[in-house]
Amino acid sequence: MRTLATVQTVTTAEPIPGADAIEKIRVLGWWVVVKKGEFQPGDRVVYCEIDSLLPEVPDFEFLRASSYKPAIVDGTGTVLQHAGFRIKTVRLRGQVSQGICFPLSVLPTGTPNGEGADVTEALGVRKWEPPQTGSAGRSKGNFPGFLPKTDETRVQVLEKTLARYQGVEFFLTEKLDGTSFTAFVRAGEFGVCSRNLLLDTTDDTATLVRVAKALDLEERLRAFAAARGHDIAVQGEVIGPGVQQNKYGLKELALKVFNVFDVSTYRYLDRSDMLTAVAELGLEPVPALGTLVLDHGVDELVALSEGTSALNPKVQREGIVLRPLKEVQDGYLGRLSFKAINPKFLLKYDE
Image 1 (tube, rainbow, N blue to C red):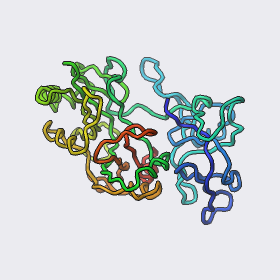
Image 2 (cartoon, one colour):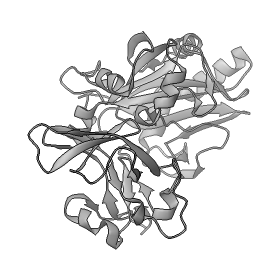
Image 3 (cartoon, rainbow, N blue to C red):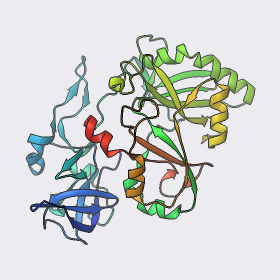
Image 4 (spheres, rainbow, N blue to C red):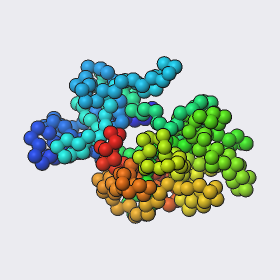
């Protein structure tokens, strides 16, 4: 289960110009708007990140008018997304607020409440993750355990991690808003996956399967594996008509690759090797945005995330992804890879 609700300490409280009843507080790397005087620096609070789905219980009922989301159910009656109160990015009196804070009294009796305690399960918080458009299709099972899922940690929870890597060179790529795609060859088997499922590759109604076939990915991956002597997976974003409102205005579906994974050794390829592999496969990488030597805090990286898309200058990009040129395994984060999401994108598309 992803950590969405934790016990954290308020580090700063600052006024909002022109606002008498509210102020902003700093929790981890997030700014959160709260009632003036509700929390003081040094207070421990329960912090719920954006994309949290809070359960329908009395403590959260005050959110019903602004945040309630009904359950999403498919044609078979299977619940795809539970009902609850969704926490999202909002702007209040000109201040962007991301997340929500509660006093420790909201916790059930006996729940650990030390700094950093994960209280997601104790509060019944789920991740708001409605089905991605464009990823439907028959499944053969869950996402394979021999592959890592495509998910990046938000920079706002990584202040200590950023401090450890000051002076390290990172490359930046555009984070695209599409549907997650993975294709692999392993021990002679070819597979296509959505974010959470292994798909049936005989189902031509599935967008991701059609994309794989249009690109001859099975043949390309098999040929690459035969030439190199090891199996690989490619991971990327499918964008275009029928996918996430086709924000980029594309006329055809497209796959943009951001990872090449060596299945045999369970490791990601370094940046230069990844680009070489993508070129040899005849595929396209996600848009590159240059490099930087890390000398930035959270707010500076969020500011860098703002801008228009390299694919369509008329739309805001979703954000940026940062990775070192050589793959690094961090003791806290795992793979050193994280994202900064553009607040303007979140506000515009109700994300």
